[in-house]
Every structure is written in structure tokens, then in C-alpha cells.
Length: 102
Image 1 (cartoon, rainbow, N blue to C red):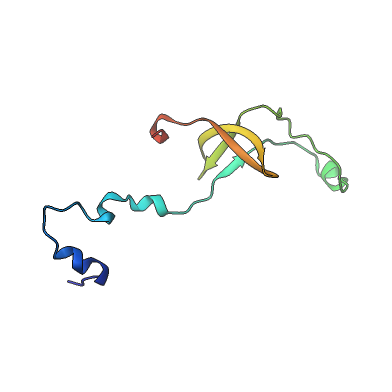
Image 2: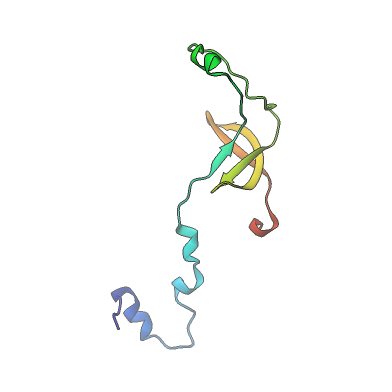
């Protein structure tokens, strides 16, 4: 059996002490993933797409105050509203599935 140096001292501690730190931490909390935000879509012909010009505005068919979806691996995991925070876009969460609520 391989012993990790960080854990050797703990292995020798009396059994009536608290659990090791790693026993109370869920390792999944440190897994990184990409969350996508679905704001809207537009249908254009190839001709319309090719005729777009710099600074032209293309409406996405989504109202400014409409709830938008947060998507993880193709599944909606939350909903919220687009807001601006310190000059950047952000999401104010308005809906979470029951399984994600603390």
C-alpha cells in the first residue's frame, strides 16, 4: 500500500478526532465544465448572411427581458436573465431544477 506523506500524520492520529478533510469534500466540486448561455437565434438565407456588413445589427428574436437558458452538455440546467456587471454580461439565476437547489 502506498502512503501519501500528507496523510501519514493523520493515519497515526487517535480515532476519536474529526474525519479527514478529504472525507468531507466532494471531489466533483472541483471538476471544470463549460456552461453555455442560449440567448436566441435568427434564420437567415445564405444570401442574407453573405450581405451582412460590419456594425449591422441582427435581431435574435428574443426580448431583452426574456428568460434565457443555461445549457450544460445539451441540457438546460437553469434559467435566468441577462444583466450587465462591471461592463460584462452576467446571468441572474431565476430558476433552478429541484435537484440543483441547496
